Image (cartoon, rainbow, N blue to C red; front, side, top):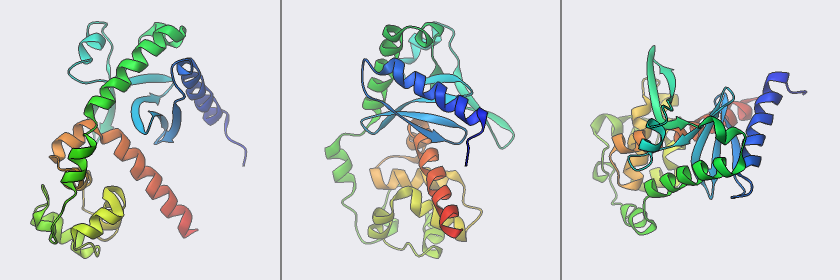
Length: 219
């Protein structure tokens, strides 16, 4: 099937952004809910939407964006405006590789800071035999997981947060995205609020991919 001109233009823009970063590193752009995620070494550090590039930011790097008057990425959720901690790139980054590289490197350093140490992640996965022993999974979440056939930490770990959420959502349509954040938090030893703040975009992209594959499998 031939791609529409709009899709081709969006892909071309995403490819151009990756090309500008090419002198620094071989980044990957992956399609996600109407835009693209930009990755390096498995870490998502930028977003592309509507021909705009947004870099991941935290308390360390955010002042550099705010001082330039650069705005965060916003979207509509349940009729209300919401935002992610990804800030628009300055105009010079679109034209000059050296400027693009400086901002991209800063965003990637932010993603690295927010990644949990390997040792901590490994220790957090030393689970017991009951879901109730996991951090952040209350009785309601445990009940929904049980209805989806996920009754032990080992089953949750094997499926991962995203696929566990997909299965649970299929039998419990009322399950909100807070459950997804909670599942990822339970698996990594973090509060769901921290997950929602730092990994919302990458988890949503993984969720979209999982749903897309599920639909294709039903055809």
